Length: 311
Image 1 (cartoon, one colour):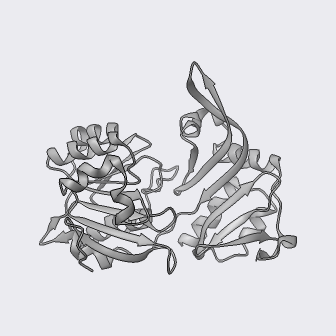
Image 2 (image 1 turned 120 degrees about the horizontal axis):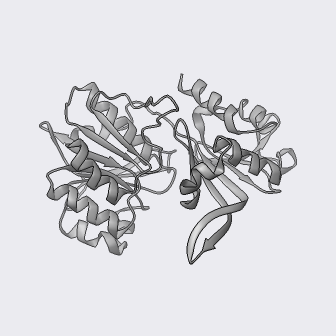
């Protein structure tokens, strides 16, 4: 079902002949598609890079399909549902999110007005991140996060493409499957977690989940606590001092937090200046470290608030 939905979504914004080629590869393993002007199209399957070819994938450059400038413009135009102006706020943040959780990272020319970023134009590269639903991928860590019906504040750590968002999706579903009736607020700043489609349907299987999409984390946390009274706030890719301050605010309001962050390891996390306070205060009680070492979603370890290994 998920594979079929993914292929159908491609039809909305990927032009021929790239669409025909993508339909010949194993969608279940597809992580990213990179389009660059006048360069071969690269696909990542299970974390490995291949050229996109008429027959699917190839390791031979001579077989590669080349992306022209017109195709880049067409992908962006179709992904914006024929109105780039309507999605300019997303474009200014460097990405477009297409229904189903597909995120298209944008490379191009920045346009400034009065020292403020107005838009991005003249697109020269696109990175399409393909969402996946890996059932039960969070189960190894589940009992360490939810102990005696009590949630531990948890930080998911991994480099890009190693399964952070996929983990978060499954964890929300696992809570619901066990009838854990805590109200979960999914703060979906980039539109990748809840995967809400044009009908307003979410592909997260949860009966206890509320969603705020495309709202910056500091604003979303304040708004969500006031409006939706969550027991748990779940969000992706924290990265600034403002994000950290908002997380502290949630904790001070008695709300649990599960978040993810880009880092290679716990040692890498310790080097981030905005996160020293979180580590010193032991705000997070569990750290889940993921990698791509044996494919996306590889568990490198589960650690407690003292950064000591549990598993």
